[in-house]
Image (tube, rainbow, N blue to C red):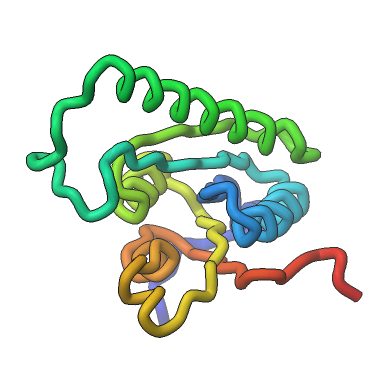
Length: 163
């Protein structure tokens, strides 16, 4: 017999949900599922966006120092990301906290999910194949392979309004 912790019917299986979003169509589809699960389980919902300020493919130690205009543009981009994240959370019919982080998306999502002791990560997948998947990488795949909890991946156009 397995020596598993004893659960009762009153113990919710899912108490903390993190929706990782990049504001894409796939992420919007995933947000519907995250909200539905949060409502069903009366769980905490946190919407997370990870912003990478480095140019794609440039290691941090080779990125040039930013001048004042670039720094101002970067700050505007950060603020816009935070505003979109808040709008997204406000559109949910459940209370949702927003988390805005900076760094490489996959490792940051895993770090935050671990720190927050999340029960479920919800991520949209872009459905890239072949060269695009190789060139762009797959945050969803990284999350699935490294997550400290269950992961729900939602493929593109997996919309709730389909009949």
